[in-house]
Length: 404
Image (cartoon, rainbow, N blue to C red; front, side, top):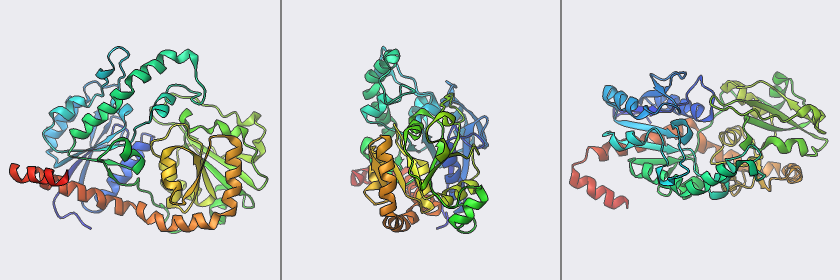
């Protein structure tokens, strides 16, 4: 479907390539897909990103004022904000929890053009608390003040999301799980495609990456933050016919230094640290084609680009039993288990026994992740939003009543 409405969209994401980060990568792929269907997209990013407009920052308290100036200059039909709260300076208040803020609050209240928001994060209470500590699976008494700050701001965080929701003309999330935490959002999956011109066989992919061709490969890939829970890899008794291939990079804004200490772990002969850091899209496709399964032992998760990427390449997952992953486990796309080393080992054996069943379900599902399809779903929302914006007030009210 081609854009025949001359839509002009301002895409907003502090994080944007070449800055490393999941939100930036997602936004870049979405922008490319939208441009491929002839939507006129301009990007507002951080100063180190390649957006047409630069100046956003998690530390910039004037993000709203800057963005209002961009809107005045560009006159877009739609402003589409990629809302990952930390990218816009989320501030928790220990004394006045209702005062929780981001640097875009003023923009949402003052912008006269229609805003669409994609929410990338929301949390149940347990995961909200688990964001506090480096060792989230253990209560850390030294961080009691941070726990307290989280506890008293939990409701305020959800109230903030409600404010953003009501100040937006349309709202998007990547899963039904998130739509339950932020009711009323449209679910559009995280897009994912192979970035190779043709499919590559497992053997060929492994040869190109110098990976073993005789063992089955469980892939641990992504940004090296404590919420990913990769510490259990050290404790897994990896079966003789499996190896774990590890590849990690640091998020642009991450200050964490999370050491797996592979050298001293018992499984060091069954763990391969690829150490290729941040991969290009084609390198990432090659790595997924080389793998039999991805492992996602996350402690906190609102969504997983790695999971969607794996599925797009026909690769099932084994993940912690968090509600986000349970949604896709119910479609027979992978396995969820308690976040314990022996449970992940059992899941590898279970994956062996039912591999063709998972592969079959994934083949049927992955067409729903195609970026062209995702772009067209966004375009439908853009067009509907633009049409409702220009309706006479009486017709607009009738539209709102019908939607409710």
